[in-house]
Image 1 (cartoon, one colour):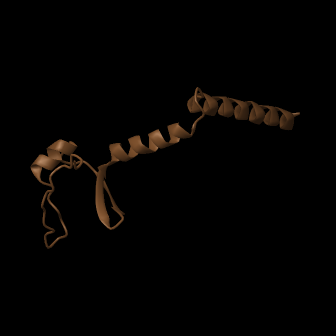
Image 2 (spheres, one colour):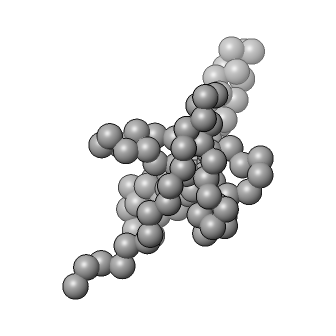
Image 3 (cartoon, one colour):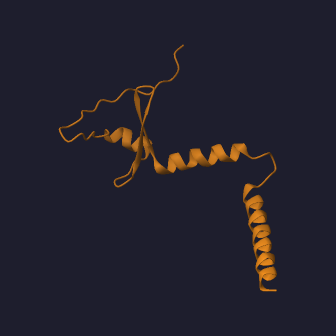
Length: 96
């Protein structure tokens, strides 16, 4: 049995290079007027995503790099605090 593949949609490129995404597809993808989209060529095909989708994918990717049970936010805060302490100590030593 073939996988459940969504139906294809048809669109034309006008003389200004614009493509109108069919309303049914815009609704399914939750594209709204004014949305900024990210276009990429992947293996000779055009992919279209919202910035929110791209951001969510990037966040998921970087989250997957962290060891289980480790909060990268907590790690960053601890690193910044340690850096601030080092800078304060360096400034205090320079004042002596």
